[in-house]
Length: 104
Image 1 (spheres, helix red, strand yellow):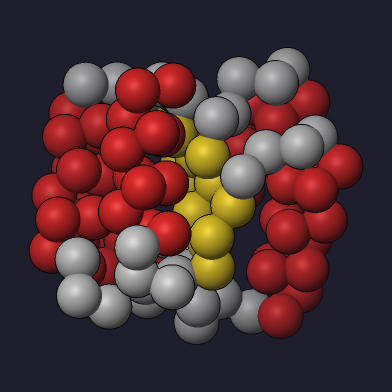
Image 2: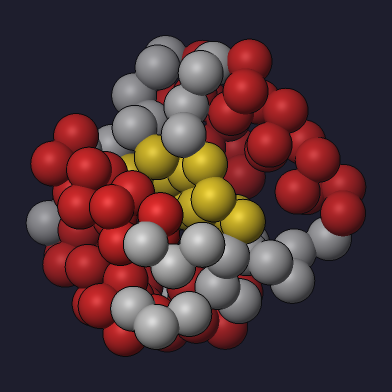
Protein backbone atom coordinates (compact mmCIF):
# COMPACT_ATOMS: atom_id res chain seq x y z
CA UNK A 1 0.00 0.00 0.00
CA UNK A 2 1.87 3.02 -1.29
CA UNK A 3 -0.08 5.70 0.62
CA UNK A 4 -0.09 3.81 3.92
CA UNK A 5 1.58 6.62 5.91
CA UNK A 6 -0.73 9.28 4.43
CA UNK A 7 -3.76 7.16 5.30
CA UNK A 8 -2.58 6.59 8.87
CA UNK A 9 -1.78 10.29 9.30
CA UNK A 10 -5.21 11.30 8.00
CA UNK A 11 -6.90 8.84 10.38
CA UNK A 12 -4.87 10.38 13.22
CA UNK A 13 -5.99 13.90 12.23
CA UNK A 14 -9.61 12.76 12.05
CA UNK A 15 -9.34 11.15 15.49
CA UNK A 16 -7.80 14.26 17.06
CA UNK A 17 -10.63 16.28 15.51
CA UNK A 18 -13.23 14.04 17.14
CA UNK A 19 -14.36 12.58 13.82
CA UNK A 20 -13.58 8.90 14.48
CA UNK A 21 -15.66 6.33 16.32
CA UNK A 22 -13.92 3.19 17.51
CA UNK A 23 -15.14 0.11 19.30
CA UNK A 24 -17.67 -2.36 17.96
CA UNK A 25 -20.73 -1.30 19.96
CA UNK A 26 -20.37 2.47 19.34
CA UNK A 27 -19.84 1.74 15.64
CA UNK A 28 -22.96 -0.44 15.44
CA UNK A 29 -25.01 2.34 17.04
CA UNK A 30 -23.53 5.02 14.75
CA UNK A 31 -24.25 2.85 11.70
CA UNK A 32 -27.89 2.51 12.75
CA UNK A 33 -28.08 6.30 13.22
CA UNK A 34 -26.42 6.73 9.81
CA UNK A 35 -23.60 8.86 11.20
CA UNK A 36 -20.72 6.88 9.71
CA UNK A 37 -19.45 8.05 6.32
CA UNK A 38 -16.63 5.49 5.99
CA UNK A 39 -15.87 2.22 7.74
CA UNK A 40 -12.32 0.85 7.92
CA UNK A 41 -11.93 -2.77 8.99
CA UNK A 42 -8.53 -4.23 9.86
CA UNK A 43 -7.38 -6.91 7.44
CA UNK A 44 -6.28 -9.06 10.38
CA UNK A 45 -9.61 -8.77 12.21
CA UNK A 46 -11.42 -12.05 12.82
CA UNK A 47 -13.55 -13.39 9.98
CA UNK A 48 -16.62 -12.95 12.18
CA UNK A 49 -15.81 -9.25 12.72
CA UNK A 50 -15.10 -8.70 9.03
CA UNK A 51 -18.34 -10.43 8.00
CA UNK A 52 -20.44 -8.59 10.58
CA UNK A 53 -19.19 -5.14 9.62
CA UNK A 54 -19.00 -5.62 5.85
CA UNK A 55 -22.61 -6.84 5.93
CA UNK A 56 -23.65 -3.86 8.09
CA UNK A 57 -21.82 -1.43 5.80
CA UNK A 58 -23.59 -2.88 2.76
CA UNK A 59 -26.96 -2.80 4.52
CA UNK A 60 -26.57 0.87 5.52
CA UNK A 61 -24.90 1.75 2.19
CA UNK A 62 -21.68 2.95 3.85
CA UNK A 63 -18.41 2.73 1.92
CA UNK A 64 -15.93 0.40 3.60
CA UNK A 65 -12.41 -0.89 3.14
CA UNK A 66 -10.71 -3.93 4.62
CA UNK A 67 -7.15 -2.72 4.94
CA UNK A 68 -4.37 -1.91 7.39
CA UNK A 69 -3.72 -4.00 10.47
CA UNK A 70 -5.21 -3.75 13.95
CA UNK A 71 -1.84 -2.51 15.18
CA UNK A 72 -1.67 0.22 12.52
CA UNK A 73 -5.22 1.38 13.24
CA UNK A 74 -4.50 1.43 16.96
CA UNK A 75 -1.23 3.35 16.52
CA UNK A 76 -2.92 5.97 14.34
CA UNK A 77 -5.46 6.55 17.12
CA UNK A 78 -3.03 6.26 20.00
CA UNK A 79 -5.39 3.71 21.58
CA UNK A 80 -5.39 0.05 22.45
CA UNK A 81 -6.07 -2.54 19.76
CA UNK A 82 -8.92 -1.64 17.39
CA UNK A 83 -10.32 -3.83 14.62
CA UNK A 84 -12.84 -1.38 13.19
CA UNK A 85 -13.11 2.39 13.02
CA UNK A 86 -15.80 4.66 11.63
CA UNK A 87 -15.19 8.10 10.13
CA UNK A 88 -18.13 10.42 10.83
CA UNK A 89 -16.99 13.49 8.89
CA UNK A 90 -17.82 13.71 5.18
CA UNK A 91 -14.63 15.60 4.27
CA UNK A 92 -12.25 13.25 6.08
CA UNK A 93 -14.16 10.33 4.55
CA UNK A 94 -13.78 11.71 1.00
CA UNK A 95 -10.03 12.20 1.40
CA UNK A 96 -9.55 8.75 2.91
CA UNK A 97 -11.70 7.08 0.26
CA UNK A 98 -9.60 8.73 -2.44
CA UNK A 99 -6.35 7.59 -0.80
CA UNK A 100 -7.67 4.08 -0.22
CA UNK A 101 -9.03 3.69 -3.75
CA UNK A 102 -5.67 4.71 -5.20
CA UNK A 103 -4.07 1.88 -3.23
CA UNK A 104 -6.30 -0.88 -4.57
